[in-house]
Image (cartoon, rainbow, N blue to C red; front, side, top):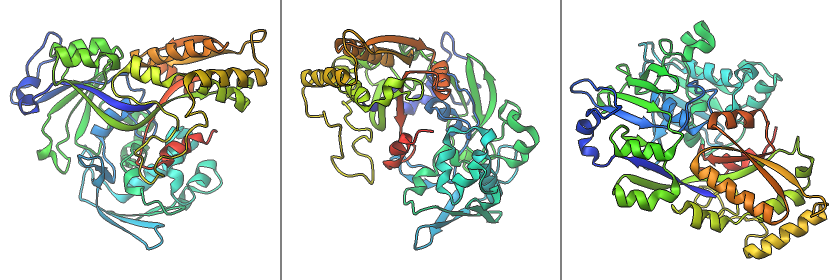
Length: 454
């Protein structure tokens, strides 16, 4: 289903400085005269390395610690960040970025070489970056990643300390959008080469953005404070942020109500009306370019290699019931992988062939397709859905379990803590995985490239 971004936030931002520095029942003290933000952030990050991360909850922290060539304007469009300006050749293949005079959090100048080093590093197989494929947009990126070309062949070079040239494999007008992504952030070469993977630990971490890492108390919170070397440090209005793992959305809701948290990145969808009733102004929703979907492991489950089986399982899901009766926060049914509103995409784009059928007709279609594939009452298809244990996901998977059982499929649910589930997905240790994808940039390729299985 196309998703809405759901968020709980204490209202009256004009009084944030006062409210944020008040101590709640379990709220750490805030220094006098400073502003502190207690931030609920769903899951514990697995890493703060921008080139090894792949979760939205990790980016919440990494994106405050670091910044790229471009960043988000209030409306989400790309604006200059570490790059003050840029130009491109008429064919759209060569982009030249002129960097502002900026420093790492240790006071060392940020140079074009830090970007070149970062892009070569993310393509190294030993970096094991899920997002390495995004850098394939740079000339010879895929070849460097495969070991078929040396790192020096990559289409990224420093023309001077503050001039970066990027050469692309093909024209990409969405490049400024893509450069906001953490995979294109620079990394501090002078620190990474000295400390290796330990550079991301508190006391070692050197960042390019408005904040610097102070501490990481596993299972409790990550603490960052204002980076005095940030080029706009005087414009940063919050002095300290603490990010708390909050996998239980209802508990997080109570903590926001009690003043222990100023914001939580999500809430249980079907509690929206209740939250609006008991805490008016706290719940915020907005449309995101995102799709919730199921991934079928065709490597380990032979049945999923049959497109009739995959189509049957997709057709059998009552999307309208899930969005309208279970979630109830404005989500809409998805009959295409690319959500509506995506830039550079056809209006009313292609949908599944069964999109116009009633749910009853889709169930009948599912039974027929399963029968054609050799499955039925005497030989039921048996599958396991591996899923994270967030409330919304649990509701959806229970509904899907019931829908599939209604067409004769035997379904087991395996619930895991979020990080455990994501680790299993990365290792392909699943039959059916419950997943969602938030666009990395506003272009259909951010969704369509997921269809390249490796």
